[in-house]
Image (tube, rainbow, N blue to C red; front, top):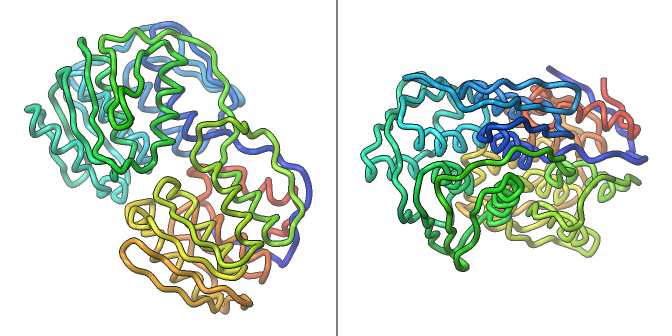
Length: 399
């Protein structure tokens, strides 16, 4: 889908979209409980649809009505084989792989080629040690076997999605387990969101010390009704209009949230002061929007960027590529990206969204300053399907 964005200034009041990270976690917890749970304030993005489909694959009945997801009373019911349709959601695949390792049945994980090619070495290593079959095939990933309670060591510089998956899986196995994380721990805030969700459903899991998590196995998830709070990750794109000269008030955010991406508020203050310097190792999803704002301001230097290579696209590389169409100079190393600031020029060719929702939204911000076209705008459906409708409400001209 190609869209044209005209030069326009955002003004108005907008509600933050619901947190996709918490929605994943709450829906999974609801799916692991036996009673009926209602998860409200849901945005039915493609990633959340994938998680709902995987709960259904476990034999649970799920209904969606408006912004509410109801997981009906009943036990997990599966046969000799479970097929998990993960679409393009890395969170969904990695969360459910941890669960599958507690079920002792054949699990087949389907998804896009990009998703299946994302790193899975943490689970592959654990599977090898635990005698679990883990096979990557041309069209899917298959695993069969069962974890045992005990001590698991993982590196702290890997995606927290693996740790969340282990927390889910080990919670279902009888016995106490310990996950020892080799520091430094990146994306600790996402682990906190998982613990928040587990606590809401009555599961005992907590930090044993600064670098270790303790999980009481054999957990009984207690059904409950929960409401998803506003999402700082996507609110960052709405609040970014203020850095670009707009006047937008984003409502519905919890100032006491455990979401790590709320740090964007502090980073944004730096754009007013001069060149921004930020370590994004704990908030990699903010990378594209921070690069865009640096290009529109006085530039910036960003460390902790190496994990951008393994997102929906190679986000560092493609942002540098697309920013060059605005006449922006960039420099990139393995764990460092420098963005030059200055006057943006209108791109002479259409921008490419690279099938990445955060790339699309970041580039659209800049197009509101210069005008221009973007291809692949439909990628926003992955996490923020109402993005273009919301920015239209703020006065952004989209055709």
